[in-house]
Length: 82
Image 1 (cartoon, rainbow, N blue to C red):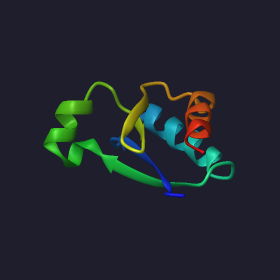
Image 2: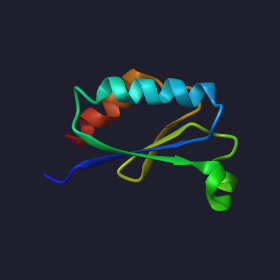
Image 3: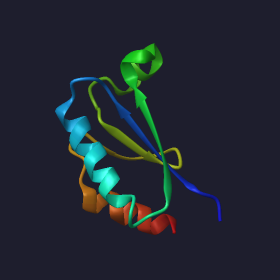
């Protein structure tokens, strides 16, 4: 079974980003996934694409959540991948 990749787009000094990462880390015990984290301020294209939306979470390249990240919504989306 291919491994699920969860991508988190963030930026420094972002309270919502910190909350999103905490929710994701709480799901690590329940689901097997590889976490990739990118600071959008390090890439002009990402800043343009996600600047007002962060944090943004993708599962296997599919955007599943942004802004207020809900742990239960992420859990449901991860469950569908397994």
